[in-house]
Length: 195
Image (cartoon, one colour):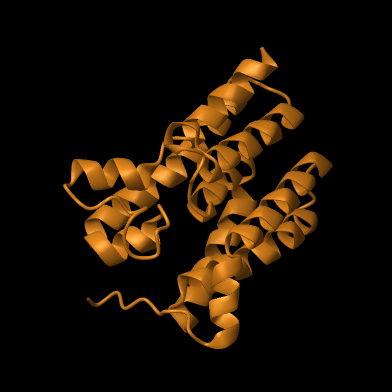
């Protein structure tokens, strides 16, 4: 039974909101335009605010729903944490889209808000604060990801969640390695929400 819960979480994560929204709205496949990343930031650049908002919502929900269902079913914390990681990995390496997924920030937030709401709020607050200052999505994501394990420790979450959050942080950093290079060279693009 545990394997089915984990598989279900992974398959939920494998649904690419960016690709599905782009297809539904008649937009180019986000994997073939802009940065090539199937995430809300790239969809914003190529499809506008509405498409980006729908993509963001979809990416968050595919992290929230599996973990929330598991919690409502009374599953133990280690299995819930495993489902959180499985949904996140589904987004990064989606079965339905050739294992080529996004960078995982929205889905990571989704699994955190469902698994440990105070942690999710702390991570969201960090992202918002950094974005308000910098207007750089990747820098906001990297800052929030780096602080997430510290928040997990500070909130005294069960150890299994601390390890899960640490794994998510490492993977987010890995998926953002090109953005890190861009940030270090001063070439990372800012987002103008007025456009």
